Image 1 (cartoon, rainbow, N blue to C red):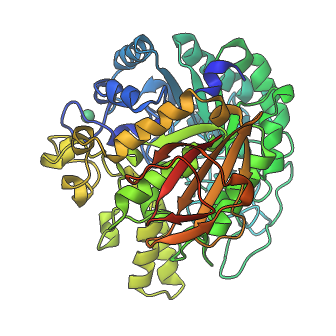
Image 2: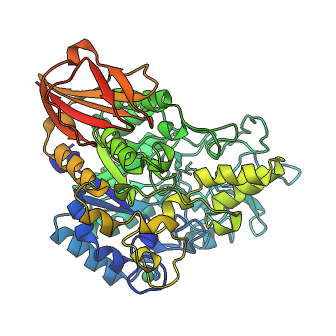
Image 3: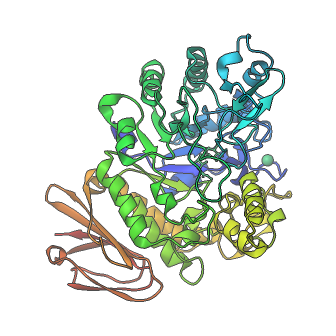
Length: 555
Ligand code: ISL
Ligand code: CA
């Protein structure tokens, strides 16, 4: 991987919730353009835009009806060109979301495909005959609930959708489809975009023959990824994409790869295989799954988080590192403390996360410690996934209160509430009615406040990123977990040659003692701490305040 890629720090902008420029309540491209200095000053140098393409917005833009057109609610193509130009003028880069596991059912390809079995686009999607009794080909369920198969009378066939039924899956076994995708990728790369974040890319190669999935308790349908996660031709297709498109440009290729083991991930990123630069791991997002999966009232165990992150650090040559994104709860609410220790825990989490080996991804609002939303009724939520799962819980006989509690903890709306810019109307996001609820805590948590205060979370993120950018130990140094057993502390070292940095963080709201391994009881220099405490040596007994985090360079 070349130098700029290794030094990339990615800021994920969820465009519709970032900044609204024309007061229609929806964040847009000119709004984002007006905030580039904010992102640059934080220390990020790459901006990943969630989908901005034409879309009926059934899944907030992950259902694309025209890959080469901008959704008018976000602006025009000239707004995009202007954004790209400004980004490059500032020395930043742009990565677009590439959603090619599926399209919207309103995409021209699908509208044609569903008409008949013998037109140009008939094989662009995955069609199967019904069972002899007319029912769906298999028991596969969709990620958002219900069957993954939908019947179309015109073709007398079912099509596959791993996500919503308005998101039919593309047929990557068809070489014509693959060429159409590559052509579209070249369209954006020739414009000058600097890379892609490839949505659900681990699902693109489907099994030749679909089979019934084993059913777990309570379930009517098989898991959506059964047979499709890292399917038979996945690496072949990505190598072809690399050969035909990616390798012709100096760009960043990031795969979103749910249901992938670290061993499989290494195949995607190992440089001699010419596939992708890095992938998103998901294992650490499963640490608080419950009996029904993702939506649960389970609290994570530190050892699970630590073990999962460490296993990826040890087994994969280069990682995307993240704790939150537009699909996940707010990190301070999930892994820290969004109450009394909101600031301390947000800063500690940033140290533990961003100083691991790999490319840091910061999701908008993390840098000011934004928290989960918490609604009083299901009607207040926007995301289709939350509504489907809530209904599923009620059907299981779960009471409304418990169902809402589980949904509140995990709903994707938590991440999607608008960016909190200041303490004025609608948090300074828009003067119109925002498309989604504003988190009522914007008067306490907002950008303006953080920029004015030299001890803010934002300023702490700046320090972490500044430190990482210029430090070869933190870029290339080997990661080693030093607290495999501790119930309260996550500590690791980064080592390059004879140089070593220790990163240690407490995950509890009380004071704890940590007995440092003997070989680390040394002099050195404290590089960062989220409390006002200075150290020039590490004692054998380290006392950590609530959520204290320390970065220490050993002599
Ligand atoms: O977060 C999940 C479930 O709620 C994941 O399993 C998620 O479905 C997976 O990460 C894929 O997510 C991506 O593709 C989806 C889209 O809804 C998500 O926003 C996107 O990040 C379908 O395009
Ligand atoms: Ca707008």
